[in-house]
Amino acid sequence: MLYTENLEEIIFHRHEMFQTDELIVLSGYVGPRPIQRLNNMPFQSRIVYGMYGAEGIQRILHNSLIGLQNEIKNINIFYSSLPVHSKCYAWRNKGQIVHALVGSANFSSNGLTTPFREILAETTHDTFNPLNEYITRVLNNSISCLEVEAFQIIEQVETPEATCLLSLLGRDGEVQNAAGLNWGQNPLNHTTRNDAYIKIRVQDIRNFPDLFPPKQLNPLRFDGRGRMHRHNDAIEIIWDDGISMEGLLFGNQPIDGIVYPKQVSSFPHASQLGEYLRRRLGVPLGQPVRRLHLNKYGRTNVSISQINEGVYKFDFSV
Image (cartoon, rainbow, N blue to C red; front, side, top):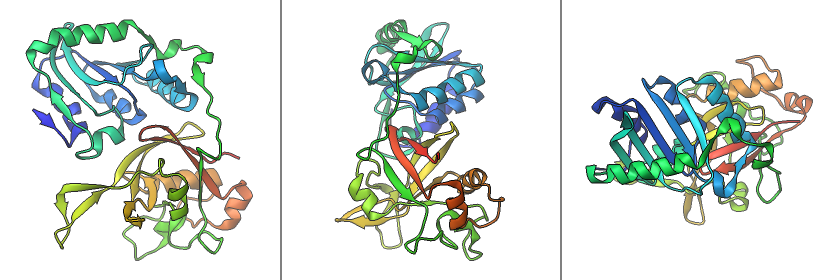
């Protein structure tokens, strides 16, 4: 069987079909949110961050993974010293593979939730032994995330070429009354009072096209005119203070004939972003954010950079 959508749900329910006591995940890149979800699994899981051997790991992602390792009792996170770009999900019982999926989907929200961008395929029984040997070799050349030395961690240096500053202000230089950080303040919107998003402007996309990928068509969803819907990309956000949340690149804006996202917010609840920023600004929940709050805090924008595919650092530090 070949799978092109609902990959996350397939992975998190596949164990119901087999007797298994362990899940092994080999992934070129990983995101915190799917790892956090393993807390609900009735068995042990080992996750290998594959491209550590070639690229190292940024401190902000490393710290997030360390936090998950210390918090969740049924997982072990490893970094491969071999450059491993493969994506493999193997369910084992007493050390033997009973089921496996391989393909192109990283163990991240972005890798598992965008229909038709990635694939996973079931392996056949005759591949179980060589696949198990491959997994064993990777594990034997991996170290626990708890054993990484400081010199092996990359300190991200924000440069103008790699960091986009997304403004929290409207075109008039003020915080919008019923959009942006105050999206939920409009009683005509189907929102809650703390709902918020951050605007992505045309110039942001022109200057940083790799940060904001074009929106992908979904061939299974059509609008009233028979046109395919465009899929909103799920991302993972790690803030400068270590807080992580799932995000969504949504809305449509055509630029040079290509459709890009127009806003970014938290997902599935846009209020998570609004509540988080209000707490950092010292604004009571449910109350509007004003320019004076941002001035008092010390900045009117958020710095965005990419940690790896679909995983972003958002910096609101002063």
